Image (cartoon, rainbow, N blue to C red; front, side, top):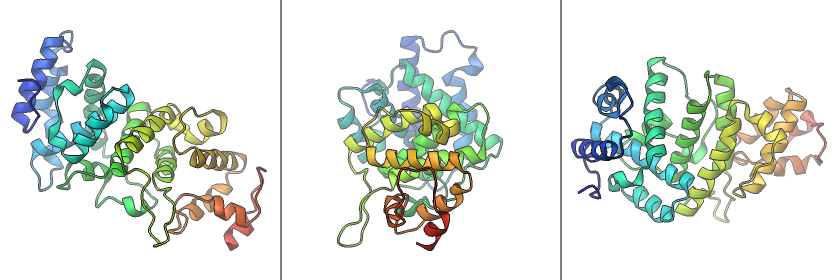
Length: 299
């Protein structure tokens, strides 16, 4: 039965392929470009070449399940919070009926994108700290290979990474790092508790839903996120305070590129973790595009 949860690769193929065939999603493609051909060749090869201790079918399921969670939010499906919660608890509760044609197109694009990234050996390692959300090896590996279902924040980082890779015509290491840094700042912006802990702000299906839609909106400008933030109104209300700070940082960096280094060093501290409004308050910075670098360095 199509509604049965996808538990292993062979069952997944038969269920998903039936849905593809029933809806004629691949009918106009040459065979070598179809889901059936690619999932048996280069897509599975990608996971095989970079495999860890878990099985290839488990890795494929976790990859697809994570993207299904994100697509539920983008589609604003009525039952999205329940589905997100279910897949977060257990990725193999994935069902083919969670995918419509646009989701299928997106999934195929993501498979192709990561094949290209690994074939070209592009460096997508981040050059700044992720604090409590640090992956053991890489964000991609954490999602598909590390033996347990990844946390909400890591799935958010994976979605942001994937959106950049899908949307740009040419990979730019500097712009990729800037984009992911902005997303890191949003993900890491939990307030410090009396215990000294800083819990993540993304701890529920609703928060995951909110941040995925925010990233989807921001991804329109991922190729040059500072230019986008400095000149566009953001409709999403998620993490509004942090977005205002990111817009200010973007304007300061565009006004004077020399500001970038001190802003990066300040937000990379374990105390501030991406949120530098307190540091700006301490140096009495107003809304001016002039940033006193010496004062900020002293703090």
